Each structure stands twice: as C-alpha cells, then as structure tokens.
Length: 160
Image 1 (cartoon, rainbow, N blue to C red):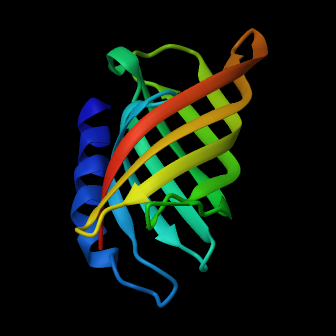
Image 2: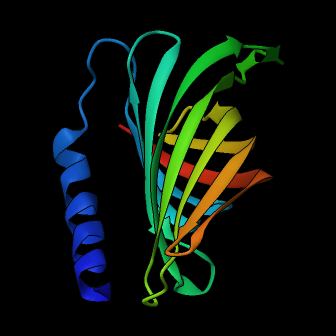
C-alpha cells in the first residue's frame, strides 16, 4: 500500500510542470506544506479567476499512519498593501479525507472553514500561513465519532 501511495505522489509531482500554465487568470503554484491536517504534503494551487483559487493537497499524516487527500476553494477577501507589497487574505471551504496506512479500521473526513494569508515575492516563490476551524468525523466498523477541531499550516510554493 505504501508503495502505491508513493507512486501516486511521484506521478503527481512529475505531472505538475506539465499542467502548469497561465490560464489568463493568474499563475499556478506548486510546493509543500507542513502542519495539520496532513503533517507533510504536496500542494498545488490553480487560479479559477482573479480572486479565487482551487488548491489540492496530498500527503502523509504524523508518523506516516495515514494518507490525507483534500482540496479547498479560496476567495480573496482583502489585499492589504504594506510598503507597496500585497498580502492577499483568502477564505473558503476545505475537505480532507484521511485513509489509514496501518490497516486500521478507521476512515476520517475533515471539513473546515480555511483562512490563508500569503505573499508572493518578485522571484517565483509564494509563502503562506493558513488556519481553519471545522469538524472531523471518524468512521469505525462499530460506529462513528465527530468533534470540532482547529488546524494550521505553513507552506512554500513555486509560482509558474
């Protein structure tokens, strides 16, 4: 199972440059993030319009016990300028599926309201920090449990 997941990640990493194209609405971004819900993950951002972006993540959870895959759709709320530089602040929904890698009988789903603050340098580097509040649901053979949760992550992406 771990070999299959690694193969999927390698294929995704190799496909990113082929998919990276300016669609007239902005620039694509690809890189990594560190934080909850996925521990370490690869991420890609695709602009949908001048103020919206679709982001996908695939990564491993803490101690590599699960694979996390998800997406968020962010709308730019505010673009404050600080000393002539723009720092967009975006908000939107995010959904993440947690698949166990250690043969556990539990499957998880997280649904969050995600807030991201980012900065893109003059050279092709984008840095961001994001926070979210939401609901985690875990399913077992014997039932399910849900609870509110918070998340946070930092990331860096190459801008195409």
